[in-house]
Image 1: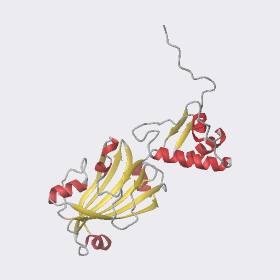
Image 2: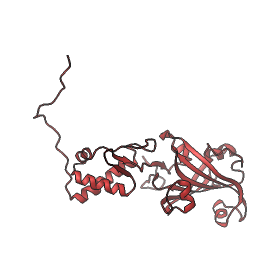
Image 3: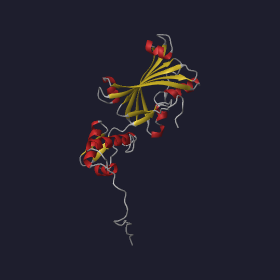
Image 4: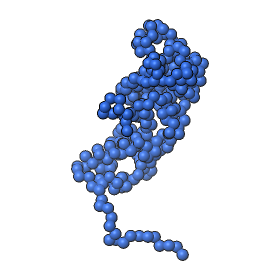
Amino acid sequence: MARRPNIPPKDFPRPAPREYAGTRADAARWARDVLRGQILDGVYGGLAAARPLLPPENELAAEFGVSRNAIREALELLRGEGLITRVQGAGTFVTGAKLSQRIDRLEGLAESLAGHQLPVENTVLSVREAVASPFVAAKLQLPENAPILFIERLRSVGGVPLSLDTTSLRIGAIPVDANLDSQDVFALIERELGMRLGWAEMTVESVSADANTAELLQIRSGAPLLLLHRLTHLEDGTPFDFETVRYRGDRCSLITTAAREPHQPPK
């Protein structure tokens, strides 16, 4: 005999419904910011999920304690940012899922994304000996026109183009014929030199994609990029590796921590 479902009586105490005490426009912006954070944190799926689906509007309205109209406005704001797409009769899907890469640890891309269980694919565009420009020579503390090893790679994660990396290395850091299709440069440096990397100086800024970069990253020309400059030193302080990494702004967020006191490790 089938058991009757355990339904609480009508007078069973229930939590009071949440209500946002503000205008609908305020509620929409607040819901937008919360949903945006959840999307970027992978709550609804990440790059591993082809089309992560958001809950229905009525469920989101109940969860956030706002009107359904406020949720519609919030979703429209997110659609304008390129984070979601709305398909009539099917639902609302995340299209701007991002990978979060920590930059407060000195790691290569494959190391930093190991927990995502997504394959990192490297397409080597160029590996050659070149002459250091005055700017690169100053960064690596080399004489002008000194020889360097230049590497350019297109890096994809889960089949999605993520970044275009150019690397200038002191000669002898890694062999010219090193297998760069499946290995991080950092691991190669440590293995070839038998020395540990020490620290890096990094600068991050926003730039627009030029036509060639846009074609490689499969985005429109002029799309926003995160531009990372990283100068990596060995443990003895020798600058060895100067990188310029152009990340797709719609596919990657860079995360770090900051302590109140200098040299205070985060808890």
